[in-house]
Image (cartoon, rainbow, N blue to C red; front, side, top):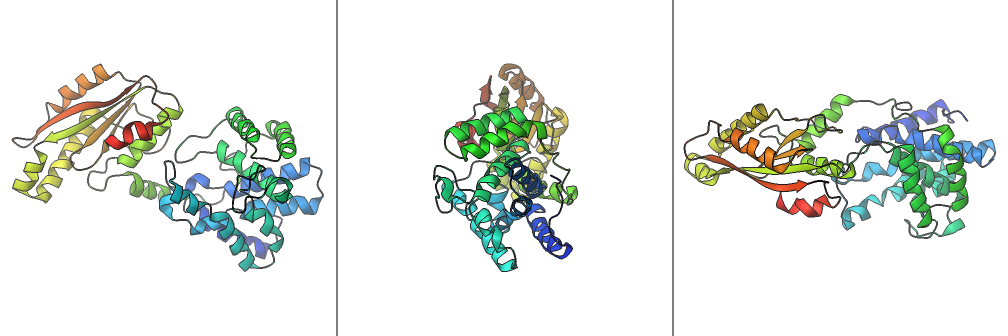
Length: 361
């Protein structure tokens, strides 16, 4: 099967424009619709389905996520675990996708597959909790293709997984009843020969400058230009997933609130910027949100006068002594004294890091 357009040029232009509207919001899912279309088309071909069904499956894969255009950025781009309310909102994207397709006209044959591509074989999926073969065949195909591509591509909260890691997770999910067992067995038997599609192979909309500005907006502190608490939590999650060791140290400015009171908030902001710059230069910290972390030491700005240092693969005793000595040499206004304390010293960053450390930040 060739991964190529199965639409007329006019229809393709409409679909490409809609897919662009989704992918331009989130570079981590760029090319996702095309890859899901290809994986789904291949699975339909491995089933021995006729060409019109294969082409229809490809179309369904292309448009399955159009409804994400209606999901707020704060949820769509969130790097951590979704709350129950946030998850309820993101679950609406499959029904929104179906409504968009319905309004496009001429694509109604795709509605069942798009609406139900998050149904689970055991009935635990959404939006309608369909069970087994109540779920349209094409939707059951797209579910498998969608999950595989999500696992094997980079996300804001983790790196891309290997073929072996992805299959191991899907094996667990088939045991829990997520997929049609016959379709999954067929997919598993052929996917290693097909391989993982390159993340950029099918993507035509790359805007790195937009993504850089978006990352700056979501993950940088506007006052100091340091990484913020969202970036810190995301880096901690990445290290937890890689089972890395690490030390997290908090730095505060003693009597900072008094300085603000006596000299004003503008002077306080100037002091924070100066402190951030001294920390950045003295410790040579990384300041790039992207994963994997190229430096071993990262600096973040928290609330008010709080700064955080995250050191991957370090020991607390040596790191704490080095930082205490370094900040002791800073040039700061009279009465302002930096001090630090260890918040986390872990041989392996715990996988429940949000609960273990999030409340302290």
